[in-house]
Image (cartoon, rainbow over all chains, first blue to last red):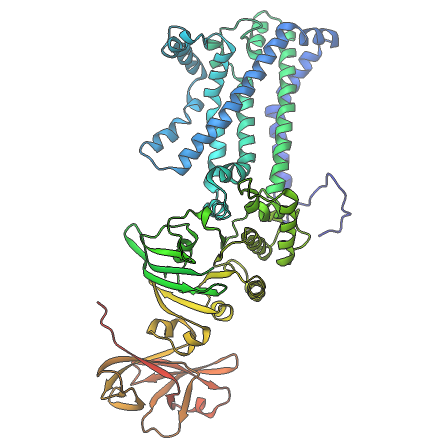
Length: 283
Length: 349
């Protein structure tokens, strides 16, 4: 087994004798190239035609920077909120049997299926100062619609199923004996949950966070209705791209898109690395 | 710590898993709960641990009623069949967990916890594996870690639920001897559940034989093997053969012949005769014996097992003969059990 010298780092592991490696790898590469790599490299190519100085000018333009900040910031906050509440929802759905459980379970998937624009309009109606929720919040001085807070709420709505559906199967797998073992060792319920159960869920929670975050960064349809789209305040990067396109400024649009692409890729890569690290440890 | 189980009954959805069980366990004893699946042995263990609450009855730890104490307060070490280790923690963190979660007044320092963990790892012969994760250990090693983790909290009682059930035969035998050594060294009151009679008889000071939610017999290995007190124990522990017989005036009859065994205390009527296949004497001539036609003969390890048809083939029993014994060649064998027991037929109400 260990004829090859044990070198640290990358090593090509011999596939098993069962055939299929060459064919499936070749297919995967061709497919990914066609579907993802070619369109994205077209994007980079197009923005490269700008030249470095122009690209830098667009990238550091205050409106661009603000839009990117809002997009990534709200997506991050929304994903963080979804991690907390999505995990609780998943926990309740797995652990308890109550009337209506199946209905709630099905409801979780609705944000997947609903056209995002519909979600955006519905949320705007609810949270605008005259809407049901907005009217309740207005006296408290909280404005939701047409502010970044509105964007967060839209993204929480959109991202919820990603967290619930990744965490749910892992909670189902938790061995009841592990909880009992913690109890016999003297751990109270709080300690059992925070020292034993949650660390075991961490890899799934990180995945759910990554998916919800990625979805939030790219979200367009629901956000533009509730955000109000005020430049420097509640204008998201995807919208800025569309605005540039409408101005026939294709170079600027692709430049912003390229920056988003690079940032998203970097963040997802880091999240994936964290994940493979935790997986390796827990086996 | 003495453990006393007093008239405990446990029902699951009105189905009784334990019916009125009482059991006294002395301090420092090693006790096996032995029985087929569904006999209630694991339920009894979980009741002692506090993982289930009895429907009726009381469990005492020493003189103290433990029934209303929570699992955490009972301070028992519990070892699960499938280890139940915390897979995101290292071996050392697993073992130290019980100390780490103590309230701060009673919690040892971190250095002290680490020292205890490596001491226990020495005890379970896994020194040097502190930094490993459970996924990197073999089944036998995991179970040793689980035992070290249970012992770290200095439990009053150590409870093991089929501790070797998921391991292969070789490792099982090894761990069995090792558990006995650990028990002798630490002196914890220990109760373990098993369905493997060899394990129970070899390891335990006393064996509790259970069936259908009841305790059938409690005794040392010698007692439950040599003097079983019920047909179930006779059949469950060791090899046994049984024959339907009739008792008339203190004599045992098979069909229309007395077989030369007397049981003066039992009333007349139907009964069942139990004996061990190897505990017999062969007879040359039959005036008062069990006689049968040889139906099959098999070599099993150091003996020859002969299957006999008794009473024209209605009953088949097995006896064991030494290899090369001439009787195995004959077509008809007459014998009499040397040690045996008769249980009167009970009406299955």
